[in-house]
Length: 268
Image (cartoon, rainbow, N blue to C red; front, side):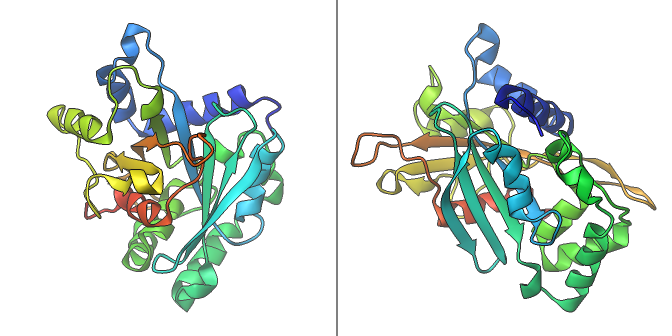
């Protein structure tokens, strides 16, 4: 496991950037090229709730660097459980890890996922590069399609494996943009598609968090029997509001996160 946070996030970013070509362009239109840094609010990771790749195994890569568990979230319709992690350094990116509750899925899906996870070596899960190591199993296109019919989440994870699903621009730390609406307009003006599921702005000042996201890039993926162009990763934007103690709210809003998951939908 990585011994320093910067190194881990640098590798996560490099891997994410390879499969999310729009990320560089987004940085440019946000003014990052003028020396204005982009602060990452949080990243998200997906997994299955099966050993050796369950949520806790992924979280260990962060808890070993001083992160601690924050809130828990349940997404009944998508059959997901999630937890977020924070670091004592308030500027450290938060980490949102979700897992598919496979036992709530069909026997067919369970059998497919068990077969995929059986191909993961337990030793690889604690290796430095696990969180950006991609797919550890063989997957043909028909199996991907079968998963897609039941769970977009399972299909995405089967196709992409272990990597950051999205990075998130902290609007609080941006110099020239101060609202989610302004960001969304900028995105649309520059030809990006904004996730409109549940509205383009998810959350509210009353919930202490507003979010929006692009729809995932679509790039070619090599399956065992063919190459197909499918959704990869996306970029999110978050604006946090101070809580009763005057501190920026560190958590997440389940109803909003539920819609953010849909940024990787194939039908979007």
